Amino acid sequence: MSRVLPALVLFVLSPFVAEYLLGNLSLTDPTTLMSSLPLALLYGGGALLIRETTRRAGRGWPTILLLGAAYGLVEEGVVTQSLFNPDFMGYRLLDYGYVPALGTGLPWAVYVIGIHTVWSIAVPIALTEALFPGRAPWLRLPGLVIVAVGYLLAAAALTAGLMYGNGRFASTAQWVVVGGIVLALVTAAFVLTRRVPGLEADDAAAAGPLWVPAAVGFGGGSVFFLAYAQEPLLPPALALAIQAAAVVAVVVWAVRRSARRAWTDRHRCALAAGTALVYCWGGYVIHLSHFGTAFAGLAVHTAVVVVGLAVVAGAVRRSATHAAAPR
Image (tube, rainbow, N blue to C red; front, side):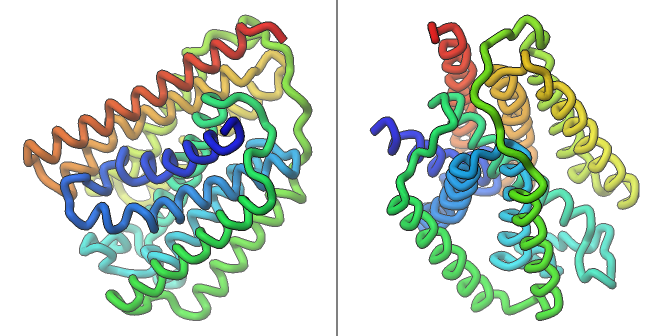
């Protein structure tokens, strides 16, 4: 169970954060239960494959983030085709900043791939690894194969179902481009990154207070989230510039800070915790836009947020306990 339990937690936590904490799905919606298993296989299976492949290869967070971006591109470019469907879910997502040569809206593309990379993949992995410290693989080869098969079956079933219900919107050329970018991201994830060393001794004081990475994650994530959420008020080019600035600022800060020997798993957990909190308030924005102000829906979503906060608090406490334990 010491190996299976963390894998199960990540399998559940990824779709929980990606869809429920974000407010995209409501537990009061009867169709939600029908989509729970496919979404768990897609999100949870994808996050597990990325985490296990990265740790087996001895790689670190650059690999996880690059593979997370590839995952997001596959989901939105192939499975749901939201990058190319002009009326996806009736929201006209591509009208804002539409680029005819690409056949997509750049603000939506950057936003949706960004939230998949960070909140669907990286944040659940970071919180789960904080709850179950260590970089050792959780699954043996047979378990990894089962997860991979489940992910592929879910992706194929969802792709076929959405194409049957909505039609095909991506051209062959667009799918070829998506496949090429995904291949480039996966290659870069292992070719352009290096193996990570073992765990360093904990020296949190030398790396600064833990509230700083939490504030960076929360602030940068909030700016990225709001840059797209405020689309009616901002020109598309300005929204893209703000999104890019938020990403670059957080990445540069994290790279510089994590290069220090004193940077520990507690700081990584704090960064993930602060980033996760963005969905705790942003989820209300999405929920209200999708489901309105019905009391039952808001009450259930509040319960989801409470569970999310409990997971974040548990991860922070566990990382602190692990750091304080004798080695």
